Length: 71
Ligand SMILES: [Zn+2]
Image (cartoon, rainbow, N blue to C red):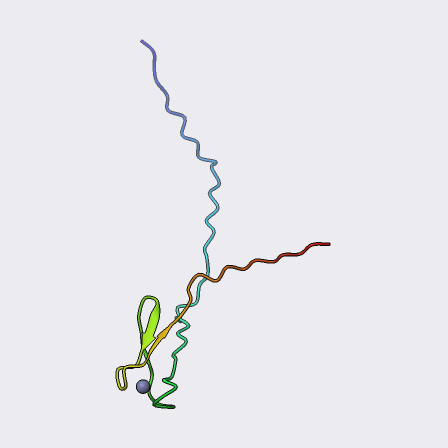
């Protein structure tokens, strides 16, 4: 009768890397260039729109950083 002994690996060091992120969401509020200061534009997925005058500003999300360095 084989006695099964479960040898629990107690010495397992688990390193938890906590990614410290600021709770602050850095929101770059865009002000409407038409209405001027004080009028912030609504943030959409890929564009900012002004609810006051309807100005739409598309913002590029995919900024391809290409560095063509040829020596
Ligand atoms: Zn506006």
